Image (cartoon, rainbow, N blue to C red; front, side, top):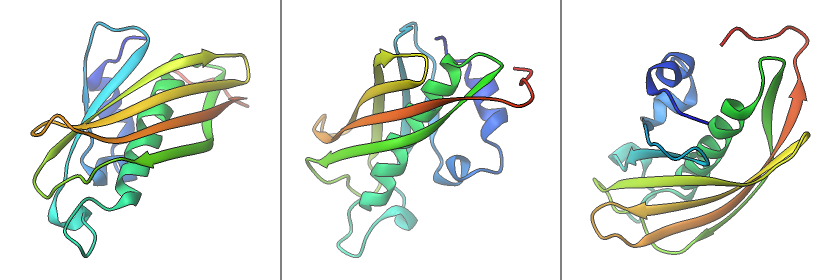
Length: 143
């Protein structure tokens, strides 16, 4: 799975992913996907740190994009389960880097391990496991 950031930018236009400002990173790793998110004032909770929903959404997005990249044109992927542990706080104006690594690529499910790390402190912010289901399309997609 090789991420083409131009293709991803085109596919996320007008979606929640674009609203969050998630920036995908091209790497040579064929078993993982990486992205960044800036913790802006509109993404924090009342205590001034990254809202947990943002971390959950970031995690779900990484694994979801990864699974859809692995799917054939006749398939698509949807989230089934996300389990996330918030280890530390993402601070306002910090950039968080997420990396999702596939640990199971089955015919009907994909399982991902996801880590979110602060780019400024290098601290682990969150660790998650995501399970996605693979579905058959009624009409094949032209990628």
